[in-house]
Image 1 (cartoon, rainbow, N blue to C red):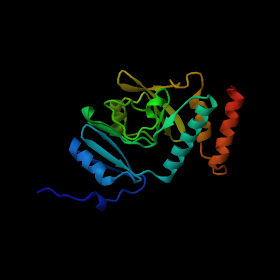
Image 2 (image 1 turned 45 degrees about the vertical axis):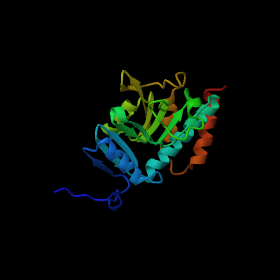
Image 3 (image 1 turned 60 degrees about the horizontal axis):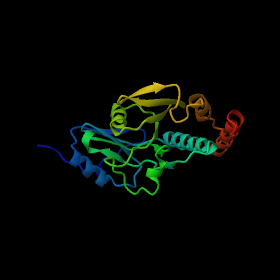
Image 4 (image 1 turned 90 degrees about the vertical axis):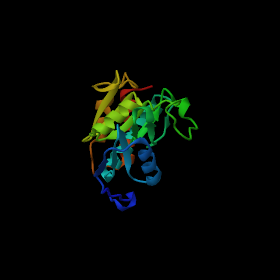
Length: 216
């Protein structure tokens, strides 16, 4: 006899994840509806495996500063962009779903302007996604299925870049979006924790470093 437990009775502590197996697509849709949109948890789903993650405060700080630095770089280079944050991306044909820590439309920014709902049967995936600690195979496989061309991962305060090649992610020393900038070295310097500096000061320092190294 099976046991049914309501999701609102399950507590996921910060830094932990709940892994559910044999979740078919209608069940995934029902779980997402029950979880709702106003929540701190994030999901990753691939081939009937669903992960529900609760980020730590440190995770959120890194996500925010990485996203802020990316926006500063885009603005510095006068590049157009749209961010859809942690929007839920689902692809039923591949039984995949993912909620990035942050995501950006850059090459396809026009498609995201004013977007209310994402339908991957007709809308493009984000051009670049941000993840802190991309350690789960479910997350990686979901990103591959969704088809996000470039993923930036902040792993222990170091930036790692993954590019989608032939349907799989390959580690890369350079960014496809910013081919002429040493993104890994530049960002990693400002992602290192410094308890004496607030985010605002790191943002200002980063902006100055860009102007010094990559004047436009």
